[in-house]
Image (cartoon, rainbow, N blue to C red; front, top):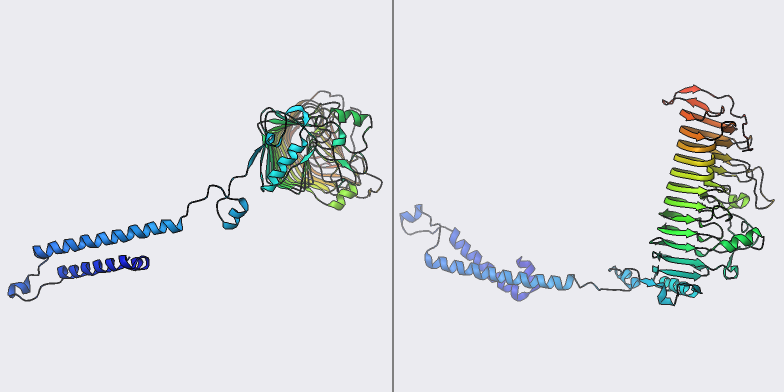
Length: 524
């Protein structure tokens, strides 16, 4: 303590040293025995000083403690003054980061600050672009879209941005295609998809971004796709239609608590993205007359979660893709590690959940569980063809319910749609390790149709715990061709003869010798 005092103040140190010396002297006087003074003094040591000395000792103790207390008070105040400076209320993000100080929260902007008018007629493209530019300049931020109908042409997002739609907010896509910019074809597709050459961009677009969030209080992004659908059917478009929302080569994406509706083409397309979460999202398009309005298309994406969504559209509810024929093979980006949970889907034209047909980069490690598919043409489907190459493997369907579905489970290996004549017909895909567990439903015409072929056999398919009520018993309702796999326990209706039979203890009951027989009927 005395050394600390000396370091902080010479005057305090001197006082403390004097006090310490006095205390030490007094202590020595008290503890040392008195010598001499007769024989009694030799045998009786005094334990306490006489009264005059006692008063002096108390006074010295009090002075010493006062000086030490004074030194401690001044030194503590000095520490507080120099080691804990007051924290600034705001600091520029770059300066704060370089100094290791507290960083201010990202700025929040209101779309109206940039001159936007939410009357459904005023074109607000410049306001959206200015708001995004302001966020980019600040290194991130949030754009609030308030109640209103905000008409706009396509615009781009930026990194570390949140697009937040209030309850009652609606972003409207302008219907005149002249306002939609043209983009290069996707490298894994070879050309636009519907036409060779460029393609229209998406209404809300982003590429090479990080940390992007689109959310809100169930506000709506409306593509107003009706005019696009009519022009497509009349063949009045010279380029492939654009998606409603498209994010490319980006990571850490969150899309939640919004409604997406009436897209010109695919609704939500993530291309070559990582770490994507889509939740609590409603996706709508007419169930007829809205061509190719897929709900969610993870395309060459990794680490994707789709959960707690409602989808009713004019094509596949969810379609996992990874490129088309030789272009997808060359691009070589798989879709992998995808979880689809707690989703309700209706697709009168196509399937609830599809893999393919564009899967030439490969698809693996997919879990589809707790999904209800109703009033749909097909339930869950894998579709591919010679020329696709790559693989579909390690796919698990669990707890799937089917209600009024024409064909419940589909694997199709001759989906012969190709970008051009340059595909290699010898590039055949591998389809293996597909499991269906706890599949239930009612009002299904064909529960299972698995169509392998001699060049593309379907390997290691498993059915366990399946009971589907059918509406037409006159036809073969469990159809198989070039399929190898097993049935575990009770499955209804009666499975095809291509599969091995096991009991619930997974003991072999009957081994199939008919794996290559074909029993496919497309008449219904």
